[in-house]
Amino acid sequence: MSRQVEFFWVNTPRALDHFITSLRGYAPLALDTEADSLHHYRESVCLIQVSHDGQHFLIDPLDSFPLAELWPPTSRHTWILHGADFDLRMLRRAGAPEPQAVFDTMLAAQLVGLKAFGYGALVEQFCGLTLNKGSQKADWSRRPLSQVMIDYAVQDTQYLEPLMEALAAQLDDKKRREWHEQSCARVVASSQIVRQDDPENDWRISGSALLSPEAQAIVKELWLWREQEAESVDLPVFKVLHSELLLDLATWCAANPKVPPMGAPCWPRRSSPGRSERLAEAIERGRQAPPIPRQPKGERPPRDRAAEVRMEKLRVHRDAVAAELGIDPTVIGPKSILQDIARRPEEAAAELIAENRWCPWQWELLKPAVTE
Image 1 (cartoon, rainbow, N blue to C red):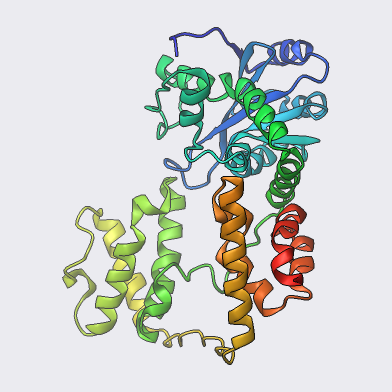
Image 2 (image 1 turned 90 degrees about the horizontal axis):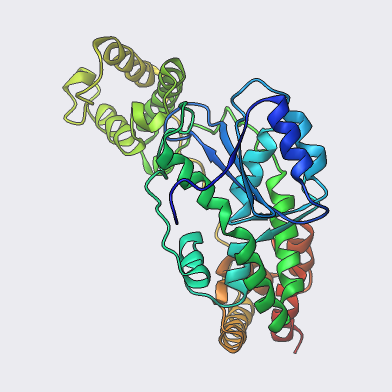
């Protein structure tokens, strides 16, 4: 991509008016977002990129102007996104409504059978350009943005519309446009679900369930300590204490209850004296707390040979259909979906679709293996 592509910076009411008046009819909007999850405790939207009718806009949600006025005039347009789920969630945080329609270029690439479906790979294939991804981990909350970051931001929407046009033609040629529309609608609906905090279980990080009850009590206190420390200095939690080190520390301190925590071989060496003291106090609270029993594992259901036969039949049928269509078998249905249908062939498919975990087109492809 050539450097210093022309763009409009939208961070004032006047600039926002210019953006709104630039919207043409019902032409699609290519959108992307940049966030700061690698640099701050609470992730926030730091930049919204829009390309439309050959123009490129960088919208600054960190500035004090009426961002709410942005959304009504954009809602009538189809939004082009790549890997839409994350950006839709971030846009919702910035006040965006549920879009009228979405065209996800990543889903389209998967449905037409492309093996490399990342944005950069698609731009290289369809536009003949190699993108610079050097600012992927930059701190987008900082101002002013460097020219390198601006170029990176613009390129992330600059090629979405030509990608949409090329992929839509292939979807139509393969008669898979409806599949894509259903899949995009499912992603949109999923992105509107807000995850609720669960104070009783949020501390159960990956790997903690394998630890002893004594170590799990320490993990809980360390998790609470880490959240407080990260929030106080506005850093992501992994920059305070990585989860692997947290688990190692809890395991060692539980196995050596009479040794001061700072004697642990896995003690973080770069902590300030104050943070180290608070960390040691958290470990001691965990040591004094009642052990937390391991969560009981669900009883393994008795072996269902009929379900196993159905599962193998589903897998063979799915793989054959996928090979014929030239797509990855998991696009039709991953193993977990097949297992649900194999166990409950009469009702599982309808429930999966109703719960927005699956699409009707996927069921239509698998149905013959269940109904034959």
